Image 1 (tube, one colour):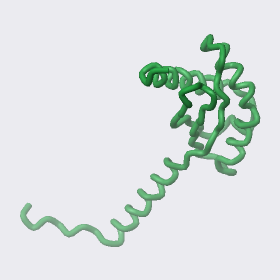
Image 2 (cartoon, rainbow, N blue to C red; image 1 turned 120 degrees about the vertical axis):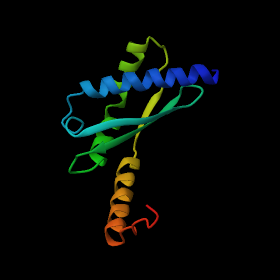
Image 3 (tube, rainbow, N blue to C red; image 1 turned 90 degrees about the horizontal axis):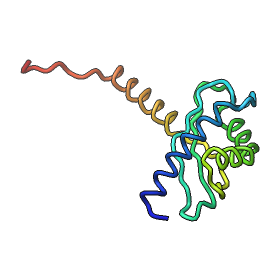
Image 4 (cartoon, rainbow, N blue to C red; image 1 turned 90 degrees about the vertical axis):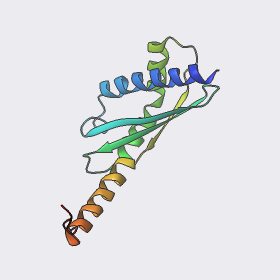
Length: 124
């Protein structure tokens, strides 16, 4: 499959995944802020790795990832039906802690700025 078409297919699949996950009634998935950050699909459409970011949950992202991996068969069927494709990839959901890591870095930088305020500019 050409790269341009593969990228377009991945973006369409990501859009459908967001809609399907939003419609799920599993209490482990509902509630909190769940974001699909990235979707990597193999060229033969065999496996799709879905990176999700979960914020605002007490248990973290582990129960959400477990619930989504358990429902991956349902998600695969729904994606195949909605996109009208014969072979949908096997979805593997993985936690993406990039947003939490960025928030932690910002917190550390703010703490450093509070401890060592910048000297006022003497030329201004």
